Image 1 (cartoon, rainbow, N blue to C red):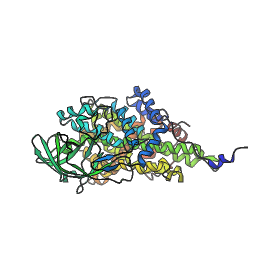
Image 2 (cartoon, rainbow, N blue to C red):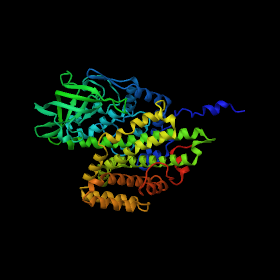
Image 3 (cartoon, helix red, strand yellow):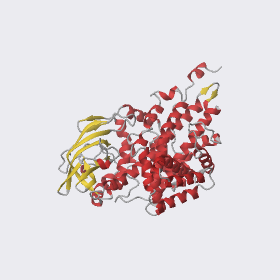
Image 4 (tube, helix red, strand yellow):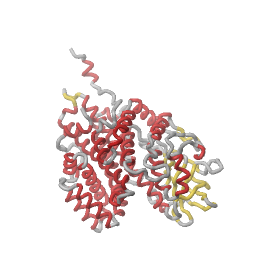
Length: 532
């Protein structure tokens, strides 16, 4: 006779000791399709390492013990430091650059993105300084002699959390500060002032949001005599005294709680110029483009984490004498989720390939510039509703903080808001369309790559009409979302053509996008998402 406790317990086993790479067929195929097949063995080892039970326990500790501000220093739980050490040892902060700060070349972006995507399934807070440090090199390229000084510390795979001048450390991390209370996204209204002081500057003002305040230095925007300018601001002055950064508070955020975000005031803070005076936005946007890419990769990873938990639960939980995964309506919901998740990883990996090839291929350079805001818009705005639906698959179990879905749900909105919210992404996309030659080349490439897919031709025609309309800005979000879905369908064509057709048919047709629309072959989608 079966033990009655089996029916009473009816609890899925722990989700732990998972190979985050080999159990994810869409990821494996997207990596191979975009030039990083040679990384497969290394990515398998990485996925097994990050999928260990100890990693998930550590992530819960980091989230439940947020950082605290003590004077001018920020203190973290040991779990946070452990994640920083892991990610820096793996080179997530520097692997896309050579030691001199030049791009590492293909397939560095794709290989790094695969790792970043897997890390996002475990712990997201520490990824902020990792992202900022990696992206800062793009902006520092505007000041080659400064970049040359910093690169030996940036490319170090050590993690050095000491609160000390960066030249005396074995490695360094960088943060960023752009927004102020009065302007937010409109950084041209910034009032922080920079006054020349010999070869350096003295900066006085504030930042309403300063990322990663434990960093060794920051790239900030301030008004110099010739206009808004980008500056490198270290925590310590050249004579090793504390610099004039005075942190007022750490933000009490909805999610991303293991990471510190701050409000800061500057009082005669020492800084060095990065790029020409008056060209601060043009300089720092090179950094922002990469942080936006990481937002999309991270949100895709969050979606994967949520889907994995929902599938794991449904395959083990019995309701009404049947496993949840065997019940038609639940199977439809899970397959519909799997379709968006597969599209998200396909499109971000294809976008990373454009970044890999941007320095040698003008079309890929145009794609990286134009599609980044669209892909960030769609992936990052899809994630919150996606994670919620995955939470609902667990019922009440998913809503309590004992389960990781609650943390993922709190985390899910952040990437859509940071580094440019939805309207900002749509506006940036519209601005990129002002280059008619690039616009035509990118749209023509998408037309070719989506040829024969349901609804694709009419969607491209709609984009063209909306761009020509007098109220193009009013349709900015629709343009961004449609373009991203087309790019995702095109990316799926090279990894799973049968999935591409289902995705285009269900996502380009319009109408309600609540999850649960039958997406065709549910069994095939779920087996691709995670082998039973």
